[in-house]
Each structure stands twice: as C-alpha cells, then as structure tokens.
Image (cartoon, rainbow, N blue to C red; front, top):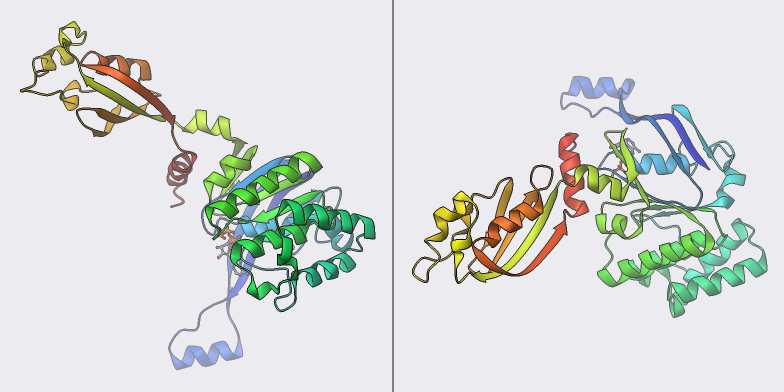
Length: 352
Ligand SMILES: Nc1ncnc2c1ncn2[C@@H]1O[C@H](COP(=O)(O)OP(=O)(O)OP(=O)(O)O)[C@@H](O)[C@H]1O
C-alpha cells in the first residue's frame, strides 16, 4: 500500500553572509549555497490498516518524509508508491485519498468559523453531500466539537483547534492519515481524546495512520509498529514488543518488606556476612548484599527500588537474595519505560 524505496532528499540553503564588506558585496552578486542532506536512502513498507509510529530525534527527517509522502515535496531520488500513486506526480487525484495534520500548522482559515473551513474543504475535495453530512455528524460527535465549529479558529485553544484540524483532515473519508505531532502542546485530557479518536477511526474505518511524535506515550498507546530514523537514515523498524525484548534489558523491581525476625536461614555468603546486623541495634543494610548487575535506585528499612539488568541476572535470583535478609511483603516488577529504551537507542546511534 505504501512503499518507499531509496528516497533521498537534500535542501539547498543560502550560505550565511560573513561580516566582511567584501564578501557581503560578493554574495550580493552571486549567492552561495550549501546542501543539507535531510534523507538518505530511506526504504520501508506500510500495510493497509496499520498504525505506524515514525520516530526520531529533532532534525531526523520525519517531517521531510511526511511531506514527500503527502506530495508536498519532491525527493531527489528514489521511488514512492502509495495506493498506486506517486504522490508528487499524481497530486490532484492522490490528495483525495489522504488526510494530513501538521500539529504546528493549521489548514483552517484563521478568521472564519471552523464550519466555513469545513465547507470549503468539502468543495475542494468535491465530497458528496451525504458523505459530508455523515462524516461531519460523526466527527462532531466523536471529537466533541459541538459549538466549536461555529467559532472562529483564532478564538480556539490549542486542544480545541487540534480536534478541529483532525476533523478537517477526515471530512473526505481518506484511506490514509498522516499525523505530524498531533498531540504537541495538548493537556492530558485532550491527548487521551485525540488518541482514542485515532484508534477508533483506525479500527472502525480501517484508516491507515502514520504518526510522527516525540511523545512516546502516543507511540505506546497507538502504534502497532515503529520505524525509527536518525540523521536522515533508517535505523530500525519493528513491533514495540520486539523492540522492548531486544533493547529493553532493564527491569525495575520495587520490594516492600520488613526486617526478618530470624535472618539465620540466609543462603548466600554475602548475606550471611550481613545477617548479624539484622537486629534493632543494627538494621538491615541492603548495600551489604552486593546484588549482582543490579543498581540500587533507592532503599530504606521498608522499601527498595532496584534496576536489574535482566540480560545478566535473573530477577528471581535478585529477589531471593534480598528475601534471605528480610520478610518480603510485596513485589512489583516494571518493564523499562519505552521512553528510556528510545533514549538509550538514540545514544547508541549517537543521535543525542
Ligand atoms: N525548508 C528547509 N530548508 C532547509 N533545511 C531544511 C528544511 N526543512 C528541513 N530542513 C533540514 O532537514 C533536516 C530534517 O528536517 P525535518 O524537519 O524533516 O526533521 P524532523 O525529524 O521532522 O525534525 P523535528 O523532530 O525537529 O520536527 C534538518 O536538518 C532540517 O534542518
């Protein structure tokens, strides 16, 4: 359905003038340009009905890719086939099949009520009257637009405007929705509303969604798969669960306990060494346990938070070591947050 092969794109930018009068005069006569390589040899496929998170640090080339896929930009080389169209060549026919939301820009007319922009979009896309009425009703209902559609865009809050932007992008029933940072700047309630809506149109209408965001909770909530780029190159792609099991090597364990009445059942030499301290006069000392491949994030006489490298030690072994010294009351094991995994990956690829 979507296939990019070897897409590269560079931008030509005018070189900044130096402060000397001579070179300033020279640049008036002949402007000098440098080239910024925004994308290098990007290839991937997306199947119908997928929600794909397209992620990467600032300047990675995400927006450039979205602009190429939506037909706004022409790449220097490579091919892009979406629903059988080449976006920048068949633009007029192609745009009827896609919806695009750029979180930082608006497609709505600033000074007129939202509904006027919607009506204009209906005419531009030649949306049949019944389809328009049905879509408008559904979008107003699901995105809780109510009276907002009769309000001029400039009077809307960011969250209200974003909901209207998303509605605007779907009035013509597109098959594919490109969302470039759709939750940027939204409060928690608006974020959840936008995410729920994206999930709903994906499930109920089979809309394929390509989502760029820096908010990993968007990715966790929505994406079936991620494609990660950095410095214009494709770095990895895969399901979130695969990414977690491949790269998420740490787990956090929270242990609630009270000092054991009789710690003499201790099994390990290190814990035997510390068992004599388990009296009221000499409280439990977690740091004396020398837990292998485990970072003690914090600990007290009642609770310890440990970060365990699960590639090198079993969680069960760490728990049983601690339990030789204390009476465990509760254990919580948390996976490494996806945010942390991504930050580690950016570091590994030297992107940050
Ligand atoms: N119109 C432009 N003219 C010149 N350079 C540009 C232009 N647009 C983007 N670039 C450069 O191309 C590279 C990729 O930019 P792009 O906006 O695609 O990245 P991004 O991944 O969307 O970044 P961000 O997460 O910060 O929005 C960057 O180095 C950027 O400075």
